[in-house]
Image 1 (cartoon, rainbow, N blue to C red):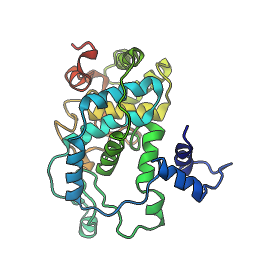
Image 2: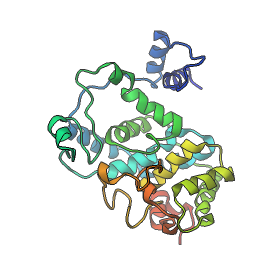
Image 3: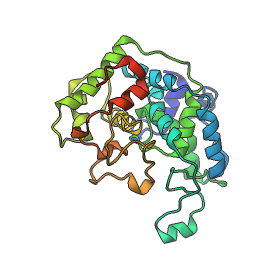
Length: 285
């Protein structure tokens, strides 16, 4: 593991027990290696959307699919996260800032869009802003392979795809294809009313690949975002771009991202989307 990556992961280590202070030299090295970043400049909603359009134009979706599969056996999670980011970003419609349903917030918030999740970077960042910024987004990429258990938003998707373009292109191995097939086959082991939590449990217990609960949660979230694990009532973002108010799960204990947080086993696998995302490498029905 690179020294800069160790610094990034240590920066947000939950437990402080035995945690050594991070030196300025370590931070400088992590920035040089591309793991840590200065706090970004403020950018308008429209400028952020325009920059996203430019980034999307540089990406071949085949590279996104290959990277996701490659991550399964290698556990290179920074390659995995781009799948959800790409299909979220690609679906973002042209729109004006959507204000809060809360009248007080709507009157006071100027840098927040409740449709795409844009939150403008602070023009005068405080200590909390500086503590997180782009660095926490990068931590999420490397720690779990996606944003906050798959809860995607505009800044994360844009940053993630910009970083993806810096990664060397990869190709999946045969074992990656087999891992993915086994993950999808777990759907057939469920009862019709089972939800994503039961699917996560089934995948984890099967020990199909090296992973943990949070990583599997993010993975399922990404398969929902691109439409492979979605339902007619809660489809992928390219079919219906749900705003932040429409993404919440029905149950308070459901910790999955939209739309897989509305998915039931009876909804099954969307084989049309599976083929659109990964091509002909899987048998389709």
